[in-house]
Length: 91
Image 1 (cartoon, rainbow, N blue to C red):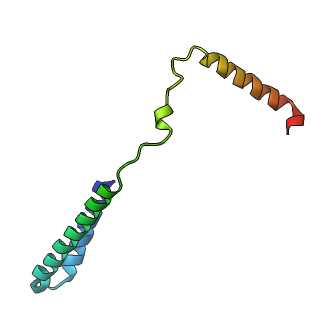
Image 2 (image 1 turned 180 degrees about the vertical axis):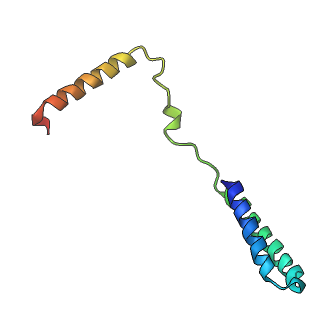
Image 3 (image 1 turned 120 degrees about the vertical axis):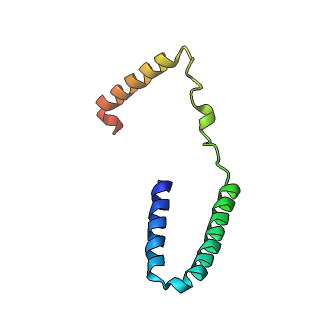
C-alpha cells in the first residue's frame, strides 16, 4: 500500500512540475525538498511518540490450551446453549 501511495505521489508530482515554467523549477524543487523533510520528520515523530501497545487480552491467549477440563467445559457450554434455545421462557 505504501508503494502505491508513493507511486501515485511521484506521478502526480511529475505532472504538476510539467505545468510550471522551467526557469522556476529550481525554486519549486527546493520547496518540495523542504516539504518532504517536514513530512518525513512528522512521520518519524509520530511513530516514535506512539509506541505500539500490546492488546490487553493477548496475555491470556491460549492459557487453557493444555487444560484437561477444556473439552468438558466446551460440552457444558454447548448443552447449556441447546437448553436455552429450546426453553422459550428464557426469552
